[in-house]
Structures are given as structure tokens and as C-alpha cells.
Amino acid sequence: MSLQYVQGKPMFTNTDKVPKQYNYLTKNIETDVIIVGGGVTGSILGYYFSKHNINTVILEKNRIAHCSTAVTTSLLQYELDDKLNNLIEATTMKDAIRSYRLGIEALSEIDNFIKEYENSCDYSVKDTLLYTSKKIEIKEIYEEYRLRSENGFDVAFIDEENNPFSFDVKAGVYCNNGGAQFDPYKYTHQLLGVACENGLRVYENTEVLKVNYDNNGVMVETSYGYSVRGKIIIVATGYNTELFTKRNFGTKTTTFNIATKPINNFSGWHNRVLIRDNGDPYNYLRTTGDNRIIMGGEDINFVPDIFNEKAAMEKYNILEQRLKSMFKDIPDIEVEYKYCGAFASTKDNLGFLGPDPDNSKLWYCLGYGANGILFAILGGKMLSNLYLGIPNEDLKLFKIDRFYN
Ligand SMILES: Cc1cc2nc3c(=O)[nH]c(=O)nc-3n(C[C@H](O)[C@H](O)[C@H](O)COP(=O)(O)OP(=O)(O)OC[C@H]3O[C@@H](n4cnc5c(N)ncnc54)[C@H](O)[C@@H]3O)c2cc1C
Image (cartoon, protein in one colour):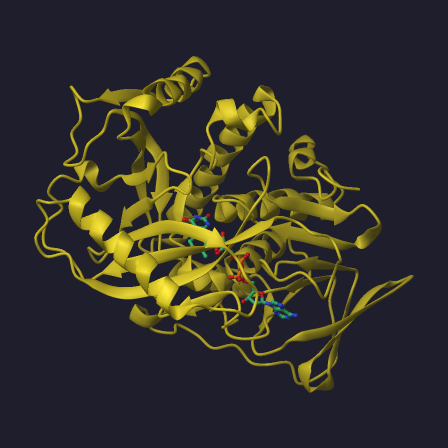
């Protein structure tokens, strides 16, 4: 685990068994594609590249899915962090709507994967709710509902009259089957299991220390002295990109999560939907396959190498009190896990996918923004096709230099 980026006791890696351990690299090897990072993003890439029979290797410096992937709440929603009307400050309405539609395509990809390979990651399709309990924000939420509805998204408007939840909803956008959830640790291991059957090679405890480019491709030096030679390298290292580029990709914050012990009944939590409020920073909530609640939010600016334990405890307490006040009919809420992690946002809420404009052998798959996992799915699909010479128009939305040259 990168202590710098994740703190506390993550729930998924503490409640799940380790399904498989991968060897570390003990010889020099060759491949076509080198993926750096064995989190959910690197594993999604590994799955899509190996599906296309592209010779691919994943190098992970620690353990599979033990950094950001261990703490992601894994709310999988097509909508972005911000509402459509706010997004047009950084992009166009057409592109924002297109991003929502791409989110739906990414959700279908996950659904198809589960149908093909069984559900061993507590996956379930979910309705979603974006809501406010403030009168002053009713118009804003209604606008989001109107724009989505006019653009063909399956949404309903909720107000005080038809609110099925135990907490105060002045206005809400309710979306049928608008999202999904899974256990990210199990999902990552499931992807790798399938991909290794297709020829993917995975090395854990194998840190990339240096990257050298030449006319033939790229050569990386790893811990213990062994090298991997490939045609391209794809950076899937989450918020940790300094070794590969000087580019500054996003604004980093720390976001806090609590996870409860299993709950007996979910009174007041209609359909156990994925919930997000309209706050800034916002709170986000889901339930789990083993009947826990995960709640997150209270984001603060990320400060590298400095972790304030006392301030974190205050954040966890705020989340716990808020959770209890939202669900007064659930008597047995008891927090078992508390953890937090770095998170990066961008102006248009989208991640970065594609080759570096200054180096065609250096590619990125960085799922920044709240929909990191869905962006990684899009990255896996579009980048594996790009490698085979099939470009995709939608990649321009995720261009590496869209904010700065
Ligand atoms: C509390 C929290 C909640 C979140 N909730 C959501 C959510 O609900 N939905 C969502 O989509 N996203 C969410 N995110 C964002 C989420 O973390 C990302 O979408 C996703 O988990 C990131 O996965 P990753 O594989 O890109 O990064 P990571 O899991 O961090 O994987 C990167 C890997 O790269 C490895 N690495 C780094 N440098 C090297 C090197 N030099 N050599 C070899 N390996 C290296 C690291 O060890 C690490 O394992 C959340 C984030 C946090 C912190």
C-alpha cells in the first residue's frame, strides 16, 4: 500500500480473502505492452489488451489492488461529479451529454463481463439518487432532471410529496438502473484471472524504477535489477505519475470513508440505491453485498506526506453522525472501518486516456474524477483498439493536453 495516498483500515482488503498472489519478476522479459500499476485500472487494461491477444505484462510495485483500489467506494454511475449546467463552464453541453452516454456504455461493459464470466465480485445493478435537502437548491436539481430527461435519460423527479426515503429530500433526480456497485478488490482479481487465461503476465512486488525510450520502443528497469522491454508503456499508477511525466493532471484532495458492521434492515433506504447529495464537497453512500453501509465525503485538500490523524477522526465522526441522522429508523449502525485516500479531480470531471502528445511510446490510463473505474473501462476498450490501429473519436474528450500543452 502506498501510505502516502491511502490511510486507515480499508474495508475490502480486510474483509476479503486474497484469491491469488502473483510472483515478482526474476528475469529479463519482452512483451508488446507494459502496464505499470496493478490496481483496478491496470487490471481493466490487462483484461482488454489480452482479450485482443496483445502480448501484455502488468508490473505492480506492491500488492494487487492494495492502493486506491482498496478504498474506492465503487459507486459506478454514468453521471459525473458535477451537474450538466456546471460542466459547461469547462466543456460543451454536447460533450458533457456524450460523457454521460459513455458512462452508460462502460456500465454495459461491466454487465456483459459479469454475464460472461459469472458474478464473483458482489456486482449488482442499482438505481441512483442525486438530491438536495436545501430549498435554495431545488431549481438547480430540477434543471439537472430536465436536461437529462430532455436528452433521453431515464430519470424521475422526486420532491417532498413523493420522497420514499427517511431523510429530507427537497428535490432529487432518481435514475432507474442508472448505476451499479461491486467489490473492487474481488473485481480486480476476477479480471486478472480471466486475462491471465488469455495470456496476460502479472508481476506483484515489482516496482518500475526507471524508464528508457529508444527507436525500438521502451525498456523499464525494475526492483531486483530485471528489465522489461516493450513497444509501449501505459501508466496506470493512479495519482502517482511523477516517475513517468512532469505533467500535472488534476487537483488532489483527500476523501474520507466509513464502513459499518452488517445491518439487519435498511428501513428508509428505498431500493438501497446509490446516493449522492448536492453538497460541495458532497456525501456519497452505498450498501454492500454483506449488508454494510459505506459513506464518504468531507473532502479536504491533499497534503503530500502529512497526515493529521486527529483531523481525520473528526471527519469520520461527522460522517457517522450524518449517517445516523439520515437513517433514524436503522437502529444498529456501528462503524467498523475508517479510511481515506487521495482523489484527483479535473475541470471537466473526466480522466486522461491516450498517448502523450510528445512521446508516442508513453500512454496513460488515469481515471481521475469520481467515475475513475468507468473511465478505466473506456480506456481499456479504446486504447486496446488504438493499439491495433483503430482510433476512436471519443478519445478526444480524454486528451492528455486538453487543459495545458
Ligand atoms: C475514498 C475513495 C473513494 C472513491 N470512490 C470512487 C467511486 O465510488 N467510484 C470510482 O469510480 N472511483 C472512486 N474513487 C477513485 C478510485 O480510487 C479510482 O477510480 C480507482 O480505484 C483507482 O484505481 P487505480 O488502479 O487507477 O489506482 P490504484 O489502485 O492506486 O493503482 C495504482 C497502482 O500503481 C502502483 N504503482 C505506482 N507506481 C508504481 C511503479 N513505479 N511501479 C509499479 N507499480 C506502481 C501502485 O502500487 C498501485 O497499486 C475513490 C477514491 C477514493 C480515495
